[in-house]
View: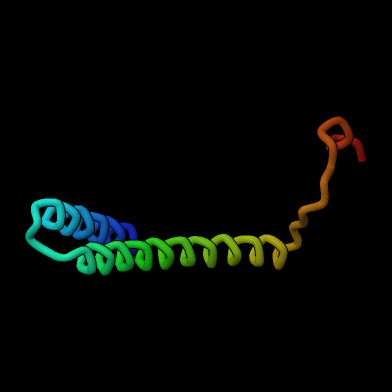
Length: 77
């Protein structure tokens, strides 16, 4: 969902930039489109961060750990 929204905002930014370059609109419209794109991208990153945090929490809840175990001693026990 957010991937599509980010792409749509990117396309809108590109269109506004082209319109500005052609002298059809003022720079503030480009700035608004750029802000909208970056907000959508930030939201996408925040969702991915939340997903990764949930995976870590699940891993730990199921008894996993992040203790380092060197490869040569991993099979010993």
